[in-house]
Image 1 (cartoon, rainbow, N blue to C red):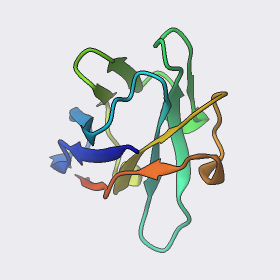
Image 2: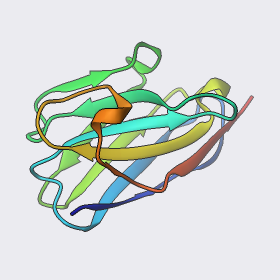
Image 3: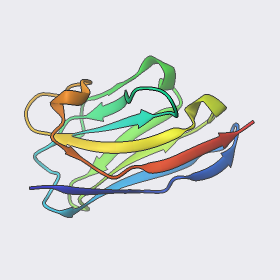
Image 4: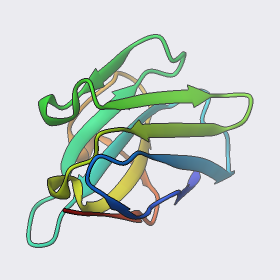
Amino acid sequence: QLQLVESGGGLVQAGDSLRLSCAASIGAIRTYVMGWFRQAPGKEREFVAHIDWIGSDTRYADFVKGRFTISRDNDKNTMWLQMKSLKPEDTAIYYCAAKRGYASHKIDDYAYWGQGTQVTVSS
């Protein structure tokens, strides 16, 4: 059983940075692949990034490469998403998620989800 809680969202201007956190309030993340997803108004939820359970392998959606960095600290039971050079099109609710086994970008592969944190980027 794993319960995830995101934090760190907010309202920023284009070009600003934000760091999102995902902490486990119940359970331990160390044996899970962790991912970030986002959902903009009127759009489907989409993959942003994932990281393997060790933290040695990461993957990103093309639209965030070079701007976002995913990381984790299993001892702190926390994962982060550092976002730089934010754009208005990054506005969305950002969700963290966890799965066992192999890393995946597919939403349906993830069993555990947080409640989401809103990121709004003004132009």
